[in-house]
Image (cartoon, rainbow, N blue to C red; front, side, top):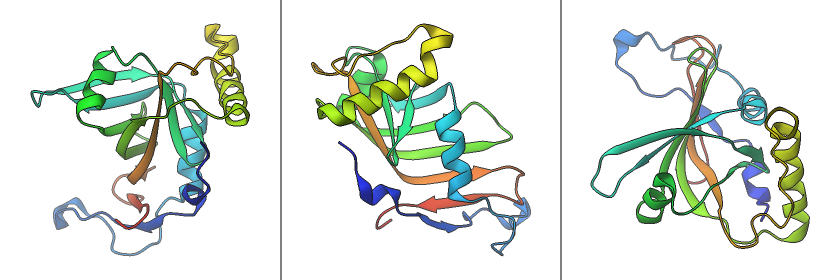
Length: 174
C-alpha cells in the first residue's frame, strides 16, 4: 500500500498568474514541501471537492491522514463523494486555513484492502489524530471490506503570504 516514490521531493516552482497579481519570478520566499507535509500531517479537517456526474461541484469536509506521501481517507462508496469518485476520480483537497494554504490536486482511487502492516500504521495514524478528540478508534481490519480511498497529488499549491510565498509543487511527469 505504501508508495516510496512519492516520498521524493516534488519539483517546486511558481504558478503562472497574471502579472498584476505580483507573483515574484524568483525562488526566494517560496515555501518548502516539508512545510506543506507538516500541515498535511497535522490538519484535523480537509475539504474535499469532487464533481457530480452531471458536472455540478460538490465540496465536503472530512477526516484524513497523510501517510507515505499520500492522503488516505475513509467513507462509504455510497456517500456523494464516493459516488462522484466512482464516475470521475478527479479531486481537489485543501486545508481549512486561507492564510497557511495547502491545496492538493489529483485523483482519488479506492485503495482496496491494505496489507496488514500498512493497515496497522494507518489505524495508528487515525487513532493518534482522532481517537481522544472524537472517539474514533479504527482497527487494522476496518478497511478489509472497502471504504478506504487514497489520493496521491499530481500538483499542489501552498503559501504563507500571498503572493510572495506562492509555491507550486509538481509530482511525477507533470
